[in-house]
Amino acid sequence: MASRILTRALPHQKTLASYLQQQVRRLSLHEYQSQSLLKEFGIPVPAGRVASTPAEVRQAIDSLGSGGRGVLKSQILKGGRGKGTFDNGLKGGIQVVESADEGEVISSRMLGRRLQTKQTAAGEGLVVNKLYVAEPVPHTEEWYLAMTVDRETYKPTIVLSPTGGGVDIEAVARDHPEQLFTFPFQYTTSITDELCEEIAATLKARGVSVGATQHQQLRNVLEKLHTLFVAKDATLLEINPLAVMSDSNGSSQFVALDAKFTIDNAAERRQADLFRESKEDAVAAALETDEAEAAQYGLVYVRMDGSIGNVVNGAGLAMATNDAIALYGGKSANFLDAGGQATKETMVQAFRIILRDPRVNVVLVNIYGGIIDCTMITDSILAMATELGPMKVPVVVRLQGTNSAEGLQKLEAANLEGFYVEADFGEAAKKAVELSTASL
Image 1 (cartoon, rainbow, N blue to C red):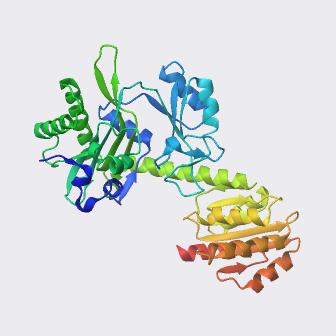
Image 2: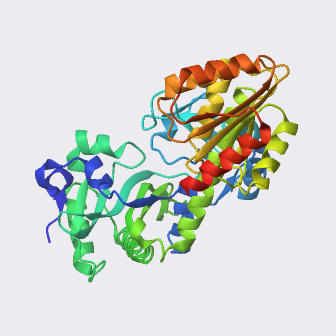
Image 3: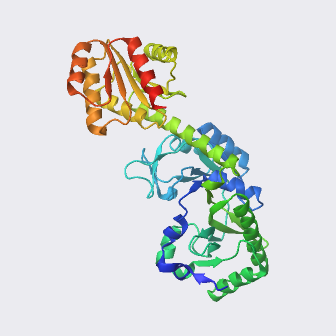
């Protein structure tokens, strides 16, 4: 079993990105989830807690016992966080703070903000809803360690670099392939003496000095990582960096400072807890994102558990619309209150927020034009139809009040496919429920 430098280990000179990302069917875990699994399986990790508010960040730092110091790490499922930029101009999705006071202030600029990294869509970024607050760990070395599956050889494989930790590992593979090694092994044999001797010999040949104690510690990490790999149906366990922490007596210990894990989707039944937690996180993140985005445009978004999306103006009308939908046997997916100061631009954003919800199979627009001019609502609907293209779901429109007749006439004249115009409140709600039921 010969060890191989990464570029030689992979047929057709595959890149590290294709090697580690070839597992298409996977559940990605946040860092705090991955660190929790490492701790559960006996691999050393820094103390840390998850926080969703600045007050919780303060409490987390106080609990670490690190003299007020802490590392605030944005929890998004994209790489490059440390060099990312928030939409408010704050540089770095990972921040080191020197006190609980500083942590509370800095976290207020991170939570609820969009973080743009090299891996996020241009100009968008991802909303940071959680921070992982970890104790700082002084260390002397940073390694890279991963356990994954090579789908071409059908073997689990260790990817190791004693100098490539804490940086973009793909850049290491591209610029310094001699620093990155792979060690395939058998599922049935696990971490054997032969494999460990091969790793030690490879490191020694590359000038990396690994003493007997450190060699045993590395073996312990690999054995426990393999146990986790099998027990959790993982396709990738990536520790970057795996730090070497030295004490005053000169002894050292491996500590996993950061981790990123992915789990095979086919294992959802066996790993029900992991999948359920991730789904709950995704729902919560989507909810917070929609609410925050709506607020930016002066809109109020409230998520519900049905399938009919609502655009209304005024909380009273929103509740009445929800009641009318329920009366005819339907359930609202939300109500989105455009208020009295809505414009064509904000209304287009309102439609965007509602239509990206996969649960929505009908949109009901119910507007009473007191302050709002109904022709503006019609213009926003036409602009939305032009900008977003053909509707994937039917849209029922009910307008009443200021210039409602003109607005309805304009909408009918446009003859948009999938649009239904109703003047009566009850008939509009009834029509929305009928269309929603028909599509289930």
